[in-house]
Structure formats: C-alpha cells, structure tokens
Length: 351
Ligand code: UD2
Image 1 (cartoon, rainbow, N blue to C red):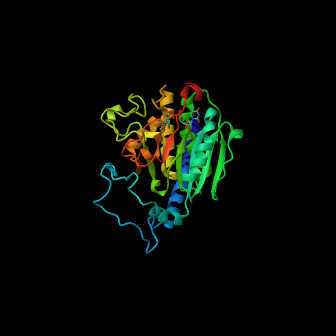
Image 2: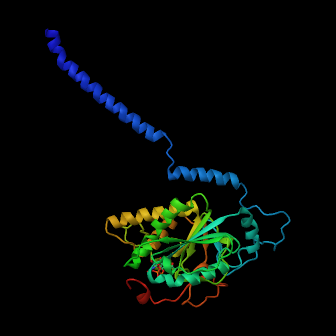
Image 3: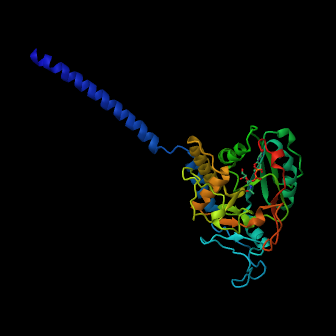
C-alpha cells in the first residue's frame, strides 16, 4: 500500500516527462525535416539555373575561327578617357570595343534580353519614342522582351517590332507621389524576375522611359552587374555626389567614400545580378521606411550604396545615359541614350 501511495506522484512525473520528451522529439523531427528536405526555394532554383548555364557556356567568349577584324593594341587607344576601373572592370566608351566582334561572340549564344520601363501617369506619353528608337538602336538583331509597367494599358502605343521582339504590359497602380513610383521599381523588377523571367531570359536592363535612343546600344554592355555613370556627376569630386548622407539610412555613404555616382535611370546585368541588386535595395528601402527614412534619391541612393559594396563588373560611360539639356562634351563621341527635356511641374503627379 505504502509503496503504491509513494509511487503515484512518481508515475505522474514520469508520464509528464515522457509527454514533454515526446513533444520535443516530434518538434525536433519536424524542424529537422524542414531543414534537411530541399524545398525548391528561389536560391535553389538559381543554383540549378547556374549549373545549367555553366555547362552550356564553357567558353562564353568563343569566336568563329578565321574571323577578320582590326588588330587590337595595348599601347594605342583613346587618351582622353579612362577605360578601366581600379577593380579592373571595363568602362565602356566609343572606341574601346569592336561592335561586330562583340556580335560574333554573343549572337551565336542565342541570348534573350529583357527590358523594363515604367510609364505611370503622364509618363505614358514618352513610351512611343522610347520604343520606336529602341527598335532602331537597342540590341538590334537580338531577342528582346520589353516589359512596360503602366497604370494606363489602354494608352500603350502600337509600335512595329522586329521578329523575336515582344512587348508585354504589366498593370501597376497609379500614384500621387513621384517618389513612390521611383521607389517601388525595385520591388516590381524583383517580382518580375521571380515570376516571369527565371527560366527564359539571360540579361535584363532597367531603363527610364522619358528617354530616347540615338545610337548603338548592344552586346558591349552585357555583364553580370552593369552600372551607368550619371551624366551630371562624372567629372566632379565625390564630395559633390548626391549620395544619402544620413548614417541612419541603409543607403548611407560617408564622406570620402564612393567610386562614381551611378544613375537610377539605367542599370542592368545578368538575371541573377539584377535580382540580387533589386531585392537588396528593396529590403534596405523597407528597413529605412520602418524607421521613417526615405533616402535622398530613393532607389538611386540605394543602388549607389549597393554598387559601392558590390562593384559593377561593367561600367557604362555617360554615352549610355546623357541628358538632352546638357551640351555635348569633347570626350563624348556619341550619345546613345538620352533623357528628354521635360517640365517636372507639369508631368509629375506632385512637383
Ligand atoms: C532621375 C534619375 C531617375 C530616378 C529619379 C529619382 C537618371 C538620369 N535619372 O531622373 O532614374 O532615379 O531621378 O527618382 O538617372 N516615372 C513614371 N511616372 C511618374 C514619375 C516617374 O512612370 O509620374 C518613371 C519613369 O519611368 C521615369 C522614371 O520613373 O523615367 C524616373 O523619372 P523622374 O522624372 O522622376 O526622374 P528624373 O528624370 O529626374
């Protein structure tokens, strides 16, 4: 009897303990399963895609045998510009590449290039000229998919396009603040890549719509992470660059830091390069918003911060984004893409 009386609490404790242990074992099993079973995450998909690409393209700079072109030199070339960054990325200027040689490398690779362009509110009026001139100069002879983000799909113009080039319209909400339109571009680019482009596109360029092409823009611009030098800030001291200067922002670049001032109006790269850029900028933008900060130049500030840490593998000179109101400078042998003159007070939803 006394044994039984003494045993009851012990039995209860034992039962409780085994229940707790059982629950812990089940939880551990569930978590382990989650940790070890490879769910097809985005990172996993990228990995598969990378392996595929690497196998397919063992020789990315392959040219056909006996191709004839001008002899390259390492001592004779343009003296008025710098054609390489201190981290040895090319800076693309007229006279630093042979366009037909570039085409003979990249055309056989059968690549697809996607281009995003935002035409929200009154900016829809710039779309026709953007597309017409892109058909004349932008990756002519390559497969190009344009993605137009607009709140006015009915106003998207019909522009005749070469075979293998397509226009896709993505509906986005209107906005009362231009800052918001600019800021949400990264999120939309990130989503587009994840949902539509993952398996069928090689490179992507994100361009401002209030611009026109005036000259060749082609395979010389391809790279993993491609930045364009802002036309307003390419010759000045970096203390004058309009980086985000508040240390509380994730876009912060301190005095004495920064390489160049890159523009938000044109950037690009491989699908993976641009996806990582867009998602990082978006995360940082949201982290800023959570503490009530909007970086000085929205996504352009975050892009500059990103490119400071993640150096671009190719830098495009201001030939690739000039501004019509600026007069041509001597080093500019050609203007390839340029922003049109516009009346901000009239065109933006808020001036
Ligand atoms: C500069 C940048 C731009 C962006 C902006 C700051 C360059 C040369 N320009 O251009 O990339 O960083 O400053 O936000 O790098 N948009 C619309 N609807 C609107 C307003 C803007 O669709 O109501 C889109 C459109 O694609 C336009 C782009 O946003 O091209 C930037 O337009 P912006 O006029 O605000 O910028 P801008 O020309 O001052």
